[in-house]
Image (cartoon, rainbow, N blue to C red):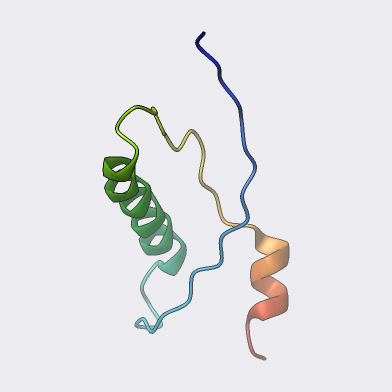
Length: 65
């Protein structure tokens, strides 16, 4: 029997970056790459990232003033 589920994840990504760089874009790419690499451990499952966006509220609260 084929089954499907949609999961909601909250993923935090931290790292050093230049002030002028788009860290959200870099972090989203890193998460997509991590999912792609992780799929090799579960070849019988299809895992895809449908949407990855920055959560401005979470980013605002974790950014030092």
